[in-house]
Image (cartoon, rainbow, N blue to C red; front, side, top):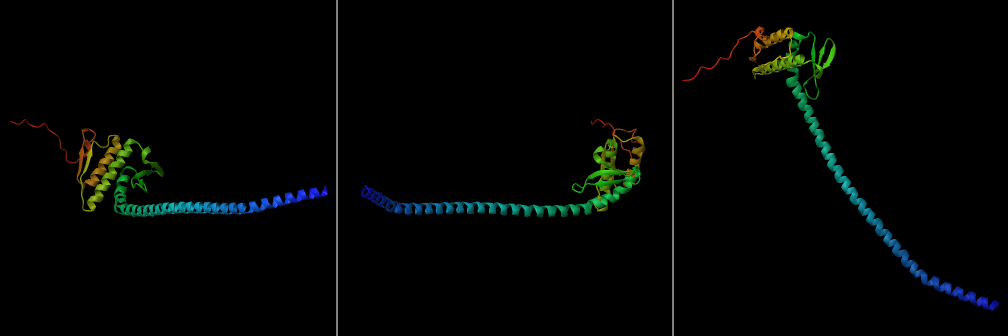
Length: 219
């Protein structure tokens, strides 16, 4: 019995050795294939990553170019705004100040940094945004700004007439006379034409009055 068992164990051992010997080449082949396929996957991922990086770098270059262009544009706009301020804003503000004080002593008009348009009026130490001012005050400011611009153009050798068509609609009697004073103040070296159908309200304006008369029939 012992000899039979030993013989059986020897047979199983031999069979196992044959199986191992047969499987070792297959295992080596599989290891080689796995390594090769694994390497190919890494190469593929690396190539994809390189392509993604190239796309991202190209996009970054475009964005940096756009940023550089926008910065140059911003710089040019700032320079143009500064030139416009020096060329127009300061002279107009200088011409406007005495006109403002005809209505509001010590008044000051504030201008927008971006728009260079009036944004607020300071009266009695209080800052009032343009949009909350009464209709009469807004039209008075608009007229005085026009007069100041016309005076500035005239001083620069480019005189232009000021034409007012039914202006000062919302202005009360007291202030309308002060506005008439402002018109006369500027009329010394400006041509100002006032068109109105409100003869009674503008009777105190003075100046040369022209009236329309019916045309005579022809023939």
